[in-house]
Amino acid sequence: MKLLEERILRDGIVKDGDVLKVDRFLNHQMDPALFLEMAREWKRLYADCGVNKILTIEASGIGIACITAQVFECPVVFAKKTKTKNIASDVYTTSVRSFTHGTTYDVIVSKEYLLPTDRLLLIDDFLANGAALDGLIDLSRQAGATVVGAGIAIEKAFQPGGERIRREGIRVESLARIRSMDNGRIEFA
Ligand code: 5GP
Image (cartoon, rainbow, N blue to C red; front, side, top):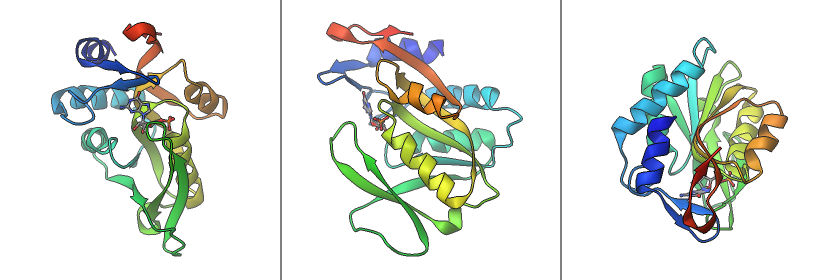
């Protein structure tokens, strides 16, 4: 998506450790007009797929997911981070290894909000090694819901998550795919 690529080139900052900082428009300060265009693109890509719910993960997916849900005219649920080991019977739980922090944390979703009849679109800001998306897929499967596909804002295509998850049969639509960002220079796939 040209608009997002242009914005990444203008406002994105390449950090050490293959991290792209997009705090100016996506991860800290947020640009809802851009999010709306992104949501419309996912709506075009997933038209007629029967999406009835958006699922995302705390925290940085929430803003994009909310606007996407508005375009899809459906609710949005976010997997909540939890510090306590959650063994309650009324939640689905999974563990996610954080790319940016290098730690593992648990996320939960109440069983009330994910149903076997749901057709889910999974939304997140970045796709790197795929751990966050794996977590959302796992929660969806525990609920017996159908994963229609994933909508990712920025896929770092030089990292393995996207290729692996597509190979597993999940549809992944990334609006910007970065092929490399060596020496601070961003190139799109
Ligand atoms: P993965 O789980 O696919 O390895 O990484 C995806 C998650 O890590 C996203 O939810 C995102 O919050 C974070 N992440 C991964 N790579 C980057 C990056 O380059 N920049 C930022 N800001 N977040 C990232």
